[in-house]
Length: 529
Ligand code: G4P
Image (tube, rainbow, N blue to C red; front, top):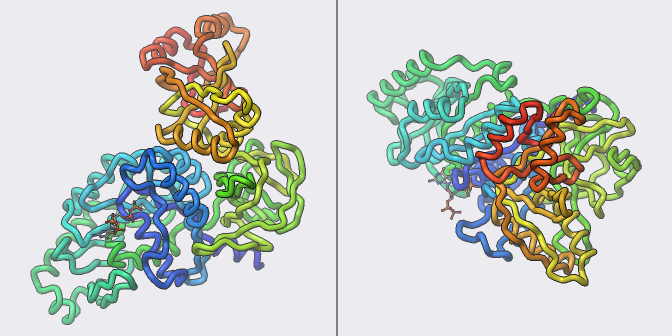
């Protein structure tokens, strides 16, 4: 059956890393193997340049690029591969967390010299919590870096991964000669490294090969053999089931810039990485092979043209076939919508498509109907779960700086929040609006976009908040809960869904509140049962 085949051949994943580890370079090389681009340098980097934190034009330029790089799709050995782009900049970490709700697996890129870095730790933790299958790619082997075993140790201790190397480097830096492919049990020796094209390599089937001995020398071969014995002795053997359950993480080594080790990674990836997975809703688990269409919005991208306030909502298809010009139920609004020009993504282009399958991402033009987390179905009233908001790090009051434009300001704030740029909290006491963001950069983005797209002016005022906690209790009539609401009145707000949030002003007051009110549960994400 064609439909089942289409599902089976899809691989939808994300590449995550600390900035500069080589995510963009690896993405580009994967596209090169897929024949989706002919030359390196074709994929524009959408990372915010270092030191550009107050450069609005830079942010705008990024927004322009990131529509086309949001989903990069290509075919490789009859598999349809969808790479979902994740911003590396830490101020956009929430964007990345949301994108991770739409991937079926991830590849983590690590710089051989720097090892595990801060952003990697945070992102991998989210993946581990969700049991997303992870493959690790240790990059920049053409440079001197940490000892291989030390790095593998770091992956275990800092990232709590259970690793199994599926490739092993021969030398490093100046003496980097190639890779032993544990997966296929053969050796690839780097022959020439044209950074723009696919590097040429010679493959040797056996470590006994005379040609290989000539290239590497007896000493290198003995060292390699010893290392491989050590690998076999220390690390668990690869097991696909364990990888798919998120309990075992294969590791590859290479140099994305030199195209080395990338094909091994890709060849193994398409064999082991999962096809689209089932997903949980508030009512039941939906399987990709169900015939009724369903999907959810994980990203909204505002149009670059301020005159036309249309946006592109990115939907991950979970089940069924999505068809053009077919009415689908917008579950939150309880209304049917149809889409005449759904966009599909291919390499760096987007084009109108008639049908898309589970695992695919479609971009729907939207004039303000969607917000992140919305579910679209053939008719069933279900809501996909697993797209929570986390407590922001920075909080400021937002004030209207042009009284004539309060309508525009409110509209602008509402739409930017739907896009997930930041979170809005309304204080219970006086209705003042508080904006919470992951990074300080977002305040500038908000101010700039409100002015450019909504002709509204705003100013921010600092506010001392340590953390936002969503609160719940078994019994809302409970005396202790009522006491909390009274005592903490000044610090209580509603989020955009109307849920009650406690804006704790310090770690100490949060701790005190947790101790004093054991009947109240303080949640650190917006989604709880
Ligand atoms: P990111 O998306 O994870 O932030 O990283 P990106 O691919 O942009 O790579 C960051 C820098 O590391 C780039 O250098 C890139 O060329 C370099 N790089 C990536 N892979 C390798 C590798 O295998 N070996 C070596 N030696 N370098 C690698 P840059 O100077 O910051 O940028 P550019 O001027 O080269 O574009």
